[in-house]
Length: 505
Ligand code: SF4
Image 1 (cartoon, rainbow, N blue to C red):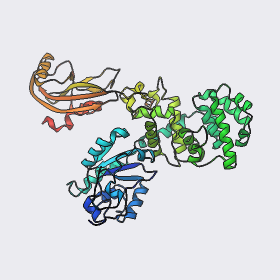
Image 2 (image 1 turned 135 degrees about the vertical axis):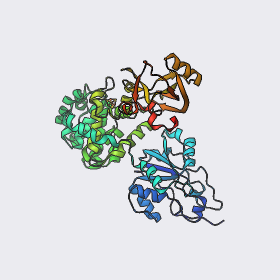
Image 3 (image 1 turned 180 degrees about the vertical axis):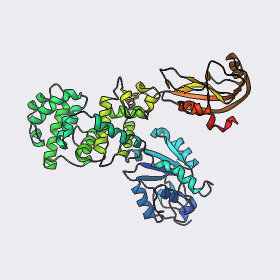
Image 4 (image 1 turned 90 degrees about the horizontal axis):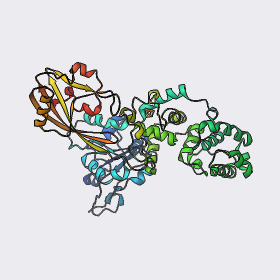
């Protein structure tokens, strides 16, 4: 067997946002030296069309393309032996464990191409990463989908999860932000002091300390030379004295290693005593406009509610993934404001107890709010266990008018409309008996596809029946399809929405 060589190993950069997994290089492709896609495979063409760019032909073009769009590519095959190959990456090009990749990059979303890659990801990797992959169709010529259809499916890779919140959040922040002294400076030293003071201390309490501290230690040199007694006295009442000690230690390092100038590099800031990823992100973005996230408890609360995140927020991986999500939407222009706006929203609106959702700019897309589950988030400790609920949804049709009900004003999906339903999975006989009890005579009945809907703490397992009835029961409101279109039917019931379902025919 000939030795196989290629110039395009699996590709990933530390700033990659998207990871695409697939069984890209067929054995035959590799033998022909077309690592990362045989020309007959439409993968590169489809990607180029999605991003409105020229088709990358050479390996260098492809690498540049991936880098520019922050895409990482990896082969998902578990084992790929090509006998005789001396190249390790060909023998097993697959990272069976993606965790290190996730930790050492900015991966936010994972896509798989083709059914096989999706199945392998689900089987071997999804659990470990606790990150669902989005399945994309295969671009192989064996897949009959047209190029246009493929491009349409692949457009999903451009959707950043948090993009929809940016403009609305910044509009709100510009209007509603509190007037705080540390918001009037770009001085990294002052921002650093304020951030350390604000850790686990209320803004109102910090205000007077901040002013006194900066009057006593106006710069890094004075802090580095501070007498311990004076420093700790000044800190009295703020608690956590180790924070004050770390401030002094870090100031000495800045004086000794950086000539007294606060470092401008995120990694250098992160290495200073007492500075974690949150504080490093806050200083980098607010003082230097670097696109690093600052995810503190407030931000975590807001975003875990917006996403209705069932992951345990005390786990480091959950935090890391949240930081990646935020980082994906940050630019040098917006990083400072987006980070501060998220913190402000958490501190003033999305409160731990008594969130003021009616005043929240994100209410329109907040999953926790829309499912009436705000108090379930953030999840700390064990992952939420979903309770299974079995239901039978009934699409009752009387001469083109459909039966609906308004839900109660409190609780899950409060105040929205739904189709009538029965508890548990009912048989056809039980549905007929139920209709008669409601004083309706069924004239035609048809079982509909089972559907499931996932809430954070609930899993609805639904079956449905279409029932044509002879007369309208007074137990329900009856509406035409046109009237139905004006009512709010929650997603959980919309699977059985009469106008979109061919299975009523
Ligand atoms: S709608 Fe409510 S729960 Fe959701 S982010 Fe806003 S304040 Fe928080």
